[in-house]
Each structure stands twice: as C-alpha cells, then as structure tokens.
Amino acid sequence: MSRDPRIVIVGAGVAGLTMAHVLDDNGFTDYQILEKGSDVGGVWHWNRYPGLTCDVPSQIYQFGFAPKADWGRIWATGAEIAEYFRDVADSLHITEHIRFGTEVVSAEWSDTDNEWSITTRDGAAVVADIFICATGVLHNPAIPDIAGLESFTGPVVHTARWDDAVVTDGARIGIIGTGSTGVQVVSALAPAARSVTHFVRSPQWVLWAPMRMRQPAFVSSLLRRAPWLHDRLYDGLLWGSGILADITTRPSWRRRLVQDYARLCLRLQVRDPAIRPTLQPDYEPLCKRQVVSGTYYAAIRQPHVSVVTDGIDRVTPSGIDTADGIHHDLDVIILATGFRAHDYMRPMTITGRGGRALDEVWDDGPRAYRMTAIPDMPNLFTVLGPNSPTGSISLQYSAELTAKYIVGWLHRFRRGELTTVEVTEEATDEFNREVTEATGPTVWNTGCNSWYLTESGAVDLWPFQKSTLTRMLSETVDDHFHIT
Ligand code: N01
Image 1 (cartoon, rainbow, N blue to C red):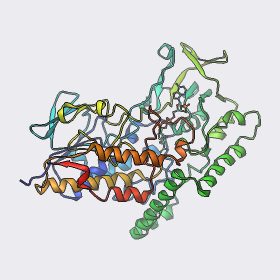
Image 2 (cartoon, protein in one colour):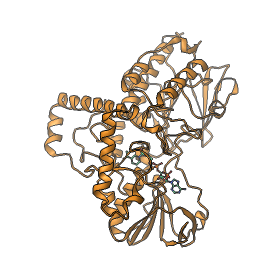
Image 3 (cartoon, protein in one colour):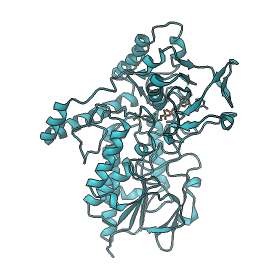
Image 4 (cartoon, rainbow, N blue to C red):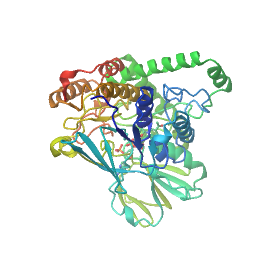
C-alpha cells in the first residue's frame, strides 16, 4: 500500500533544517520538527557568548540551497548566523513545521505496529513511521568535575549557556578551557575586564586569520546581482573543503605547510622566550580541532591578562587554587570546557526492535552505518550522526547529502515498496572496520587528547575523502539492510 510516511525530526539546527528542506523539495509534507529550544539554529541558538564568531568563512558556512550574498563579515558573528537560520526557516516555510520548547525524552519502536512512539518532556506522545535524529554533536555542555566548583560564591557560567545577567566588565574573570570557544571568549572579554586569568590545561595551536574582516560591500552587491557567480564561489569553496579533508586525512606536503604556518604563528606572535614554551603544544598542529584567531595572542600579551598552565587544584568560594599553591582571586568563572560530543541524541532514551536500547547497541561507543543508520533501530536515521566530518568537510554539504540519502528510502516507503528498513550488524561492522583502518594516517590520530576521540580512543570523525562521502551517500545497497 502506498502512502506518505509520518516523519518526526528532532532538532532545528543545521541538520534538522536541511532535512526539512529536502523533504519539502521531494513533496514529503507530513513532518514535524521537535525542538527543545525556543528558536532554530542549534549550536547557533544555544551559544551566545561574547566574541562568538564562526571560524569557517560564511560563504561556505551556509546552506547550499539558501545562499546569502551579503554576509557582514568574511567570518560571520554568531548573532548574524542565528539570524540567517531564522530567515532560512521562515522563508522556506519550515518554521510552521517546528514545535519549539518541545524536548524529546524517549522514543520507542513498536514491532507490531511498525512505528515509533515519541514522548516529549510534557508527557505528550507523537507517532511516526520515520524518526530522524538531527540532534547535532555539540549540544550537551561538558561541566568539568573540579573539586569545590559549587562552592564558588560568584557566577559560574558555561559558554554554551551564556547568561547576559553576568557582569564581566570590571570583573576578575577566570576562563577555563583553550578550545575555539575559550580563545574567542578571552579575546572578547579582556578589553573591559579588570583581569582575565586563562586556565590552560593543554595549550592549543592557534592559526592567525583576520577574523574580524568585513565582507566588502561591492562583493555583497556583486554576488546578489550575479547568482551564477555566487554559485561558482560556493562550488569553489566546497572544492576547497575537499582539500581540507585531504590535509587532515593523509600526510602530505599540504598538511606540513599548514602545520608550519601554525608553528610560525606561535613564533611570530609570542616573542617572549620565557612564555613561548608554556604555550607550545606537545602534539602536532591540526590534531585537535584547529583553533583560528586573529586576536588571542594579542589579548594575552596585555598586562592584566595571564595564562596559567599549572593544573587546577580546586575551586574555593573566592577563586581557584592551582597545583603550584597559588590562589587566584576571581569574581566570575567561565567554563569554556566544551561538550559531551559523543552523546548524540542522548540523554533521550531510545528503544528499538525487540526492546533493544540505544545505550546497549552503543555499549562500545557510538557507531552508525555511513553516519546515518543504526542496527536494531528500524526506520531511524541520524543526520550528522557518528563519524560525521566535523573536522574536515562542509557540514551543510554532508547534511544535505545525508538528507537526500534518507529521502531515497522514503520514496520507496511512499511507493509501498517497503514498510521498514534497518541496517544490518554486518554492514555496520564492515563500515566501522573501514573507518578504523582509514583513521590510521589521519592527523587526529597523532597523539593528542581531543573531543574527537571517544572514551575507547576511537576517532569519531569522517576519515575518508569528500568523494567517498559523496559516493557512499549517493547509493543505497539493499544487501546492507533488512527490508520488510
Ligand atoms: O571545547 P573544546 P570548545 N580542567 O572541547 C578544557 C566548535 N566551535 O567549546 O584540551 C581544565 O575544544 C580542555 O582542556 P584539554 C569547534 O568544533 C566552533 O572550545 O582537554 N581544562 C579544552 O582546552 C570546537 O572544537 C566555533 O586539556 C579543562 C577545553 O576545556 C568545538 O566547538 C567556535 C577541563 C575544551 O575545548 C568545541 O570547542 C567555538 C578541566 N577539568 C566552538 N575540562 C566556530 O567558530 C575541559 N577543559 C565554528
């Protein structure tokens, strides 16, 4: 019997909006997006910390199906990106499919009815034939387990849950964490702070780039008037993202060139030979998610900004004690300590075929077939799920390819050719074996501790070239699935 599937998408960020657009494009209108936040954007909704800037150029960090000619900056601010997401959702009529403030707490597959029953925080249930988790990677803040943190008498704020009521001007600010976020926050808060103490557990390589550069008005006007040129620019940048994949996935002179540039940035910007060694990472550039900043090294050169590399011993009511016995008096503590990146759709409780829990299926860490299908989870797909190319290829491109791949199955559902589709254990194992083998020569595997690594030390990234991503998501191999 042919009929349109009832579809539920969780999340209205890059992945969710892309999925919705591709559904609309293919005439699948019976879908709703459940979003726990009050707006679209995903990370760009939740992250509102001072200095938030995308370190990927905006002309590539945008949806291929919704090009924006007039970005204010080459590297857009978080606020401009959030507004862009809102405009895209409204203009493509996706917003009317979204239920905001609706957190999914569980989803259960029924073997008898062949459908998902999805329960939200307020106790409501939604039934779906197809359940799509577009929940992102960086959405559960990681709160560090530091002794005494709760005893601090001033505000403690995680960057992904920024509180505008926290006063930072004129304050003695302690910032923990040196990832992309920590570096941006230090640069943004230093000018008005009384002091900034940056607690650096592991120094990062920081690539210099003019992150505050405006996109010239004539470029905006030209791209607006010549959409074909805009398309060519986007294609060119997409091709460039393929080069980045190559740099990270296999050793070459191109990788060495970028790494030499990172070392040069440190040498040229941290002239003081007494300080440079403390900021010199003990691992290869590009091993962690590369930090890019045009302001960080200048910020920490200021007399009221200090970098503390001694370990944090404990937090006290008035500040932070470090292992060298020094007490740092503070008014505010900012946690730029990143995310629990491997949770994916959890803490949702997901129960698949035969009552198998996702936690059980992922006992040894998150795994999916080609980033999108999970054994024992019929009619469930992830967009930007495990092994997504967060460290190399355009996420918008990857999300759109995945969405089109999923829609391929939905067309067959609609035509009555299938009721359920579930990837086999064997195909998933085989894909994951290929992934493990391919991570060997990647730069992410060269001896650093990063959020790319799962608890068992596996690299949770896309270790292949962009062409492999395109191929794998452009074909459906029926032998890899149980289809009823
Ligand atoms: O988080 P991170 P992030 N005591 O995990 C430290 C994206 N992003 O929010 O390295 C002391 O990179 C930890 O130390 P160590 C981007 O993909 C994009 O900065 O584990 N320190 C590390 O320094 C990025 O990679 C943009 O030793 C502790 C830091 O906290 C991703 O988000 C902007 C600690 C965490 O760094 C995450 O970046 C911002 C402890 N107990 C972010 N626990 C764009 O511009 C943790 N740390 C696109």
